[in-house]
Image 1 (cartoon, rainbow, N blue to C red):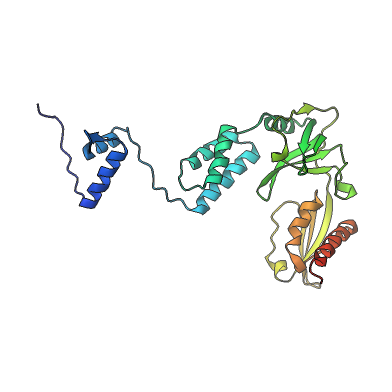
Image 2: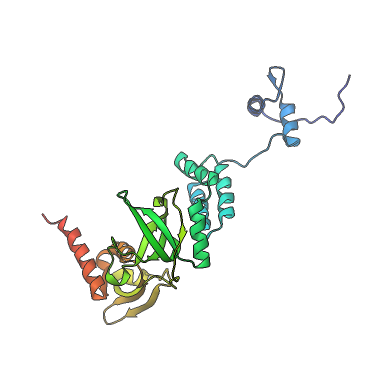
Length: 285
């Protein structure tokens, strides 16, 4: 009996033939115990084996996609975040910790409390929340304004709460809290609260000056910068920013070192000066 069909001749080197035979064995395309390159080619043609692009993605591309995934999560686009996550999981280049993190996200894109918080924010409805701090203590908050933000690669619930006990900010900002989302217990129950929804967080205006090369290179990265002007007499850049947490403000300007002066209000200036003085004590023998 003769086989019907058109013959296909492959022009390959001995090394390439050996590699094809190894692939045939790896994908169980054999004739008896021997590798069968023809079966391998036919399986590819029939879609039984699927070809994928070379796994040569660089770290920058993987990091950019993972940032996009996190941004989609922050904005509430969970379907898009899952799609990006599944794309990343197809790649062999991602390291084990990142793979485990993404796999855990795909298996559970959002906890029930997260979806309920997002619903309350969307509908502008006050709610109650249980939170566990770094010391393992449980706190109960009545939240009247909130948004999910990202600081230094971590997600936070930035919120205005009735409760002020434990707050370390200045008096004008005592009601503002930054709660890490990963410290909200999985079993947390979000319950409705009586009363009104606050239009925004408490805010203050803070003035600071930037000196030397930083004065020329600085660009406003946020709408919170209300004033950005050059002071020719002082050879400094004057910034007035709307601030709702001195903690995050100090973390930013601290890295500017001596090229930054916090001008006011006095309560903020004094607190920052105390922080700098305490830091300086570590270097005084």
